[in-house]
Image 1: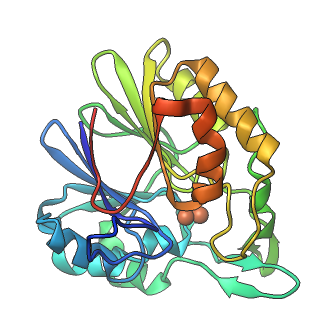
Image 2: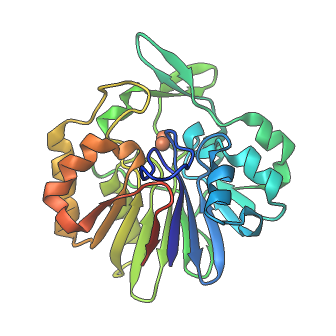
Length: 279
Ligand SMILES: [Fe+2]
Ligand SMILES: [Fe+2]
């Protein structure tokens, strides 16, 4: 399995990739090309071109959740790809907001994309196999606390705004012969909950790697960060679980990453735009 980071918050100094808060990863497994999230605006198309990636041959898109830093590249993608089906939860299209006493920001998916390309969307509500060894898991167990940074995130339900429960979030599993690779988006439902769910889904299969964001930092509100002890607790738990590799970035944030690093040492690596991962 190969993964290429097409869009992320950071880029290597010497490169000209478009960066912004967001995530998009191209996954290649058994000859299938899966685009996991689409980043923001036209950064996906520009970075794909710079990396020599042909988005026209992508077979399927998986959308981790409804925030527009993951769905914002969909319109551009659909203009260059005539074939791929888009897999997401129906709730990903509900209105979503960042809200504090000082700011209110709409971070929903652009609803025009569904109107324009309605035939391209498949709503997922059970575990769904989209290719050999490629699974979408829409129900995430809630055995561990979710990141407290989520407290400023809201969703629109029946005309009122309520704390987001992240029912719009899913994750993806790539299953090799004897191990799993898990893809998160923002990990709003908590990396421990996601890993625990994956273990239940694929009983007895070792989890080799987790790739994606863990939402330890708000991209919208400076200084809104997960308490250090919560991040350390999650990192120690990951270590105990024996997971070999964590490739993280995006909303894990630089401080979240540097808190996890001394615990996970060589097991954790910072993702950045243009990075290629082979597992
Ligand atoms: Fe995000
Ligand atoms: Fe998010």
